[in-house]
Amino acid sequence: MFRRERSIPLRGSAAALCNNLSVLQLPSRNLTHFGVVHGPSAQLVSAAPEGVPLAQRQLHAKEGAGVSPPLITQVHWCVLPFRVLLVLTSHRGIQMYESDGSVMVYWHALDSGDASPVQAVFARGIAASGHFICVGTWSGRILVFDIPAKGPNIVLSEELAGHQTPVTDIATEPAQGQDCVADMVTADDSGLLCVWRSGPEFKLLTRIPGFGVPCPSVRLWHGTVAAGYGDGQVRLYEAGTGTLHVQISAHARAICALDLAPEAGKLLSAAEDTFVHIWKLSRSPESGYTEVEHCHGECVPDTQVCGARFCDPSGSSFAVTGYDLAEILRFSSV
Image 1 (cartoon, helix red, strand yellow):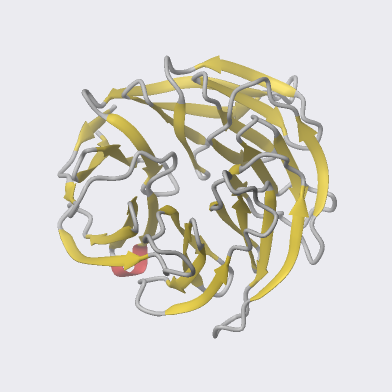
Image 2: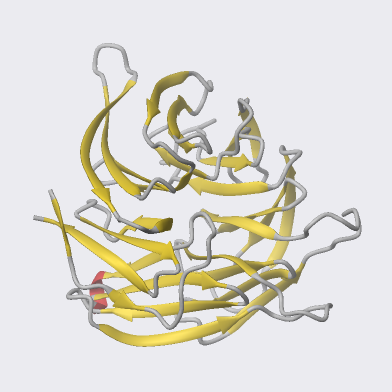
């Protein structure tokens, strides 16, 4: 069971974008950072465990070429082995900051040369894998940036071609030293999933075809891909082979966010039907297949949910954002 905790106030509403919440926990400082996108700006809020907001910062999208301020599409903290960077994506490019948003260390402008005049240009989908940060784009290509241990000497090292439609989300998990292990999955507007092995050269291992609806959010857990779709379904696949293990009719409307608590094997799904569900994942010792148990359902009434994240690796608390809602809702286990 989960109970509602003290909400964290925002200066404005969250934009109606999928995956519109990022959370970074800092146990050593007893702080949690929250990041939310609204229009041309991103709000960063630091809060104490009781939900008391301690600091707020607003970041704006770099203008680039154009007359109107660019819209930010996502904000996400990337935890690398040696540093944490805050990454912003927008209709103009990709901005990388130190973790508190105080200093911008890198700017990558998007090249719209191969886009048609009616095509929207943007970046979306952010994840860290080893010392790389991967960012999806409107063209379906994934940009791989090599991040140094310190300083701004960030290099675009590779562009991955696996998708024909805009990338929606990217998820990674530590490779744990195994060869040929699938440690990154990317999703797009057609519902196609691409499973990769990261490294100095990324390798496409398998493609999991879509079925006519977008896949706005995806996660990776112990070699299992969890994918949330525009028809409210959550599907669990074997990452290495693409075999479907579980299909859940989890929501009545499009899913807008998935998250995983890796220590507990808990999966969170949030959708436009105002519900947030928590599921327990486990491996069957007999078949080796992933099994799912429903743990909790939380209704956020009269709210278009657009972001939801666990606030700790054990899944004992989570946070939710909604369109036209000037606060971050917090829930913790009883």
